[in-house]
Image (cartoon, rainbow, N blue to C red; front, side):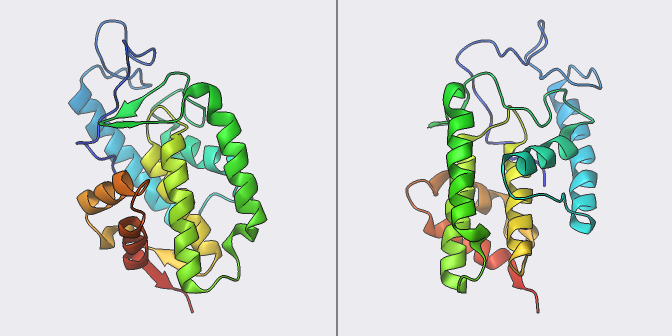
Length: 203
């Protein structure tokens, strides 16, 4: 469940989330070495993700639900766990939703999901098309400063579980899922294929 190390976040200036003296995210462990922070973060979030496989976050699959997932996974590491980011960020050539539009875009997306009846009762092909769409849109909005991928994957896993599918992310490589996520804005087929590969119908 670790964040992809080759998909780093960029900001236009010194990040407000960094320590003043080093470009490392301020954290509750006061670690100022990026590699050590990543190691600690991966260890903690792996355990949290494991806990969620046994006891998922309960909710109504809206903004609060997503934010509760992020808070649970990252609350031991970052004070911003479960909170909307307050600076614009990008990764590679991808610029994510500007901060002034995040709340609006999240509300519109989750209203659409509600109108879609949370994907209930769809045949398999349509279900995975829509699941891919919502995962892609959440990735583009990228509401958190760090840990979007892990929180979004867990939200998608829980949404699929609600509809009778168990998602096992380890059935595809991290690099394949990363590449598919990056390309999904213009070519969603690869991400959809990954989701189908990871899915197991629950009888």
